[in-house]
Image 1 (cartoon, rainbow, N blue to C red):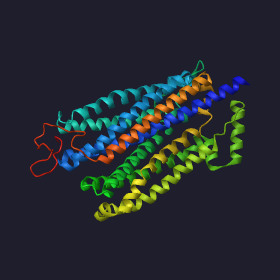
Image 2 (image 1 turned 90 degrees about the horizontal axis):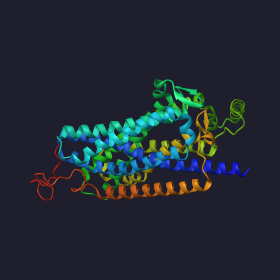
Image 3 (image 1 turned 90 degrees about the vertical axis):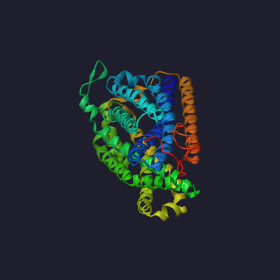
Image 4 (image 1 turned 180 degrees about the horizontal axis):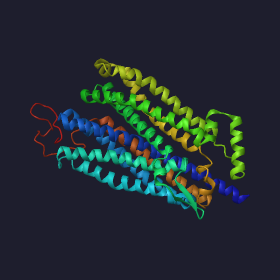
Amino acid sequence: MAVSSESTEVLDLARLQFALTAGGHFLFVALTLGLATVVACIQTRATFSRKPLHARMVRFWGQLYIINYAVGIVTGIVMEFQFGLNWSGLTHYAGNVFGASLAVETIVAFFVESTFLGLWIFGWHRFNRWVHLAMIWIVTLTAYLSAYWILVSNGFLNNPVGYREEGGKLVLADAGAVLTNPSALSAFGHIVAGALLTAGFFMAGVSAYHLFRRNPEWELFGSGLRTGVFLSLPALFVTAAFGGVQLASLAALQPMKSAVFDQKKAEIAQIQADMVARFGPGDYVPSEAWTRGGAIVMLLCFALMMYLVLPGFVMALFRTAVYRFRAWHVVLIAAVPLPYVAMISGWVFREAGRQPWVVYGLLTTEDAVSSLSPGAMRASLITFTTLFALLAALNGWLLVRFARRGPVDDGLGHDDRTDAGDDGRDAAGTLAAPSY
């Protein structure tokens, strides 16, 4: 009995640690992926228009993107240690299938993406504007590829396909099935649209803050507010569309999660009995509080955002509302956390709802967790959670600090070799643009 109690404690602590760290990292990814796309689009416009305003927008929003990326990538490195530390049963049993996509993601994110991001940051005035533009688009596209490969791994855990079992382990049998897994593809569309939604609300909120304070950079932040609002509307509906596709497929892929979400007690009891007959004794019903609760919070956030972006889209068409409607500015500032809450609650619904399975129908979390002592697991939980909390606090502080400062001449893309005056302005008093 004592051994069973210790094993249960280790499992609960390992699940809690992975939930906190994976969820924390996911919040960084949401803004990074969306903001990279926005920055790339703004730089494309700046490259063609050659206008100082657009170049300054690239520098301001690009600096916030870099901050979030730099801190977020550290959380990604720390999080991946857990697969070997706490979930050795998973890597031993299914690592031959889902491990390959994790390895590709690591190469894409930590080599290709990081390399070109470094070239973009430090090559601002060393490459011509077209090469520099190509670099940010490579960064953006590799960010999408990174997200795709992560979701290939996650999709396999939620809907295992393209495998066969040999010697008590899973091996890859059909790479095409794994790469085109419906669970991965629909989640990819959902995450990408959600990331754009997060970036849209972030841009609108930061811009609204400066417009509320009557910042002299009114043209830059007016354009930023419009960009954020105009992006948020289509992103919200695309997010909802892919979310609907996933909900529609639940009954076939994960019937227990679907039954818990719909609160069909008779169906839950029937599925539980079927799983006991198929897999042996055990509790195969996920926590209703986390599963259904996560889904309800996600749907409530969607409703709130819909009520904000629909009238917001109309108001953003009018110059007076953009620059003078201070009550709207306050609402946009307060709404910045909404897509974050929606994203994390949706993730809770997706992941908590498949319990007790780590690989659905094949491997339970109880069999996947490493053989660790409760003391070692508690120490690991405290260490990882503290580190992630510090990184989240650092990221929040840096984002708030640099967002409140607004665009400055000595930030990203600054070059002392420009032909402008010492204060960074040309003879007409206009701030000089980077070398586009």
